[in-house]
Image: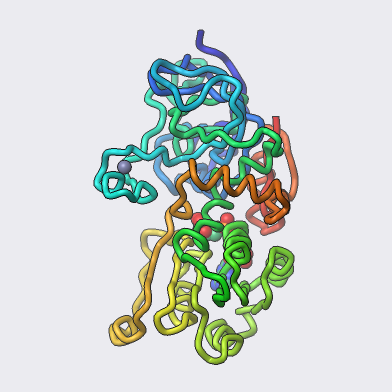
Length: 361
Ligand code: APR
Ligand code: ZN
Ligand code: ZN
């Protein structure tokens, strides 16, 4: 029986979001209905609302979530009702070139639920990143559910569904930070801070946080940065070089998504170092670099998608490390809020006042 639940809808470009009754169909083959317990507010939700992703309004927002599987469709064997799961927006296909080459983290044929959730009048909803978890329940592909230890708080577990995984994964999966490496992180919002946590976990000796906001640098320090640089008042590249015996960092992680910070990342790395680009630029942004510098500096330029994570490998591992007290994922939760508070949470996020507001149910 289709169910009616409450969910947060972005009705049209730049219109305020609102709570509406939505209809969740029974799960079809390969699908699961998940009762959401917590869902973080991410910049991408705001971008959907602003029409910056596509214009397939109305959107059902929310994509950084944990909850309990309520029911599963035909053929689902990986999860069963009652499982505590973290949702991911990249259920890998197992069949594309990347998957067949044994690199499913690069799968570009990821899939979501095929059936559609709707408004009461039948209007089809576009779930943000194929999830739509600012809702009491949502419908996903079963491959989007990863079972984790139910002892962890849902508002903490859900963080792994997006920004925190993107940042930690940028350091440990994409950047392959090693013991003793020097690491610079440019942009210390939620994603950059998570990269700092990942770098620390990987055993980096120096972690240099770069930001233009002193409040962000203070938080970065509490997350594990050993040095901070305010790039409004100090040249970021010179500062990073100065802190690394004139060499530049072994791994530089860019978590802003602007031409000037891409450029800083490029020049702040050691010769043969690695640059990891996590910040997402807008379509019109370009960057000009002397080819001789590109050629002459060696090393690797990498972009990191969703922290190049494999949810089945990385989510349970990071939950374990959190439970053991070796990383503190709870430090990313600034506040828990209600379903009706998402619009205000966007405003606070825009002001840079929160790392994560998390809707709890
Ligand atoms: N130099 C350094 N830091 C900057 C600059 C700059 N020119 N401009 C902005 N920042 C800092 C901000 O002060 C803030 O601390 O970058 C940080 C960005 O953080 P958030 O806005 O909280 O964004 P976050 O969620 O961390 O995502 C960062 O990663 O995955 C991508 O789409 C995401 O592009 C975004 C980026
Ligand atoms: Zn694939
Ligand atoms: Zn997100």
